[in-house]
Amino acid sequence: MTQATNSNLLPAHPARRYNPAGICIYCGSKENLSDEHIVPYALGGRWILPQASCAGCSAITKTFEQTCLRTILGLLRMYFGFPTRRRKERPKTLRLKVKYNLEGDWSEVDYSQKDYPFLITFPHYNLPNEISGVVADGVRNSSARTFWIRGANLGQNIQTRLEQICQQLQVAAVMPTANFHTHEFCLMLAKIAHAFAAAELGVHAFQPFVTNMILNTDTSNAARCIGGLVAAEPLSKNLHEVSFDSKVSINPEIIAVRIRLLAVFEAPTYYVAVGKRALRSHAG
Image (cartoon, rainbow, N blue to C red; front, side, top):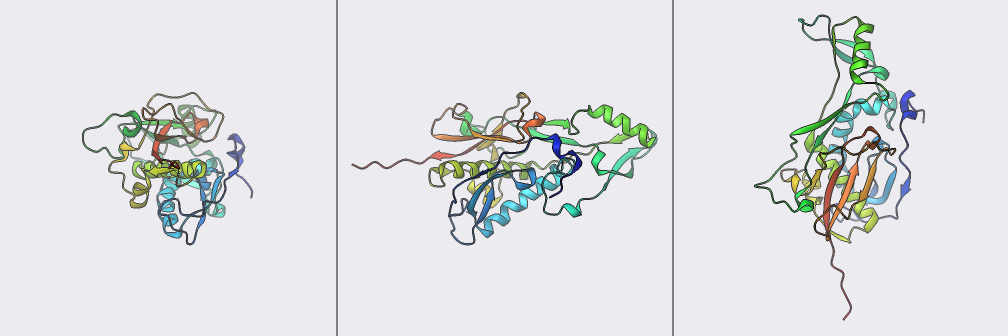
């Protein structure tokens, strides 16, 4: 498959293929199972858990993942040539908002997709209640009070890039694009964390916390299991990072999964409390 011009600017996600689950890791069905990409394929994810998602659950996870991948991360995916099964459908130009004078209204012009200015936006959350041990008053949904925002064109300050575009188009101002959907983003974090735990530990090794959230697409109490670090962490050489973190939780029985999507951009770190370790039976 031919890759876009900017694809070589990012590190590859290493390939990993687990033993087949043989059961839907979300609902327990053993019918019509398909492979599950832990980090979405469309983000370059190459960790695969075979035979892990039934047709019904796959349709649910696909819906909220596509919202994230097409709206929140769509421009980034095009710019850096992330995988797609519809590469021929990617546009050559995108509509860019500009002002020909600062007192005027915004207009739209066609601008080259490979040079298009855009922002990456992620929410900031506190650690989830199950990990921090903090019991919040009432329920807390997927809403965020603050956001992490960066220009996505590597190697250049976003303001410098906007000034160059203004000169090129002979306009007074340019509006970079950013979109975000916290509800779908939290569901994607839950799916990544649960799939990772099921692949590494086995689907019966823990009592899951987030499967109902995923299947019902209900993030009304997301803060119980989904959160993160407000403080920035150092720039990473990895595209994505997903791992267990046994030190972050005050309760050693809680399984905490650390997720840092697009770590190479110095993106925020998230934590998902995926469940509680299952009790092992002992022969008497």
